[in-house]
Image (cartoon, rainbow, N blue to C red; front, side, top):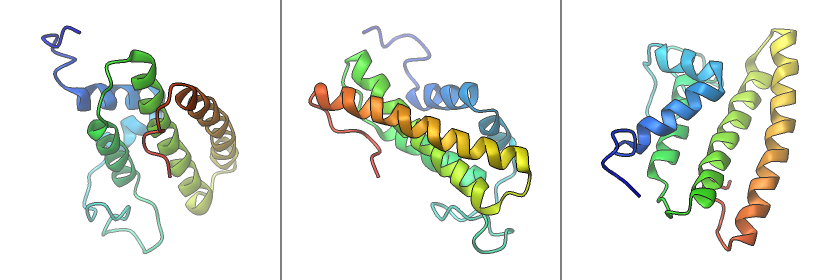
Length: 137
């Protein structure tokens, strides 16, 4: 693998790019000001129990960045996408808990359903490949 390519030198940048491309909320979360407590999932300016998208995205990106690459593009893709999809589920669950807009609440339910199905496919592939799912909860 040619690691001299600028994109390959920065796996965190690749993970962030994937997140931003797949989820419009990711772009919003990356642009939002952050006054949160690291790793808590809460923004200190938000009431207790309310979600902080910025912290959720940061945690998800850190998990993807920390993942050891195997060199097998199929396995690496499956492991990274599993983490990414679980992050989408977590964000959607936060929307269901805290959101009010009927259209977004409906979308959150659909995201959870779709992402769980895709995680099952990724997990089955990883099991066939003899790899444990990265980021499994």
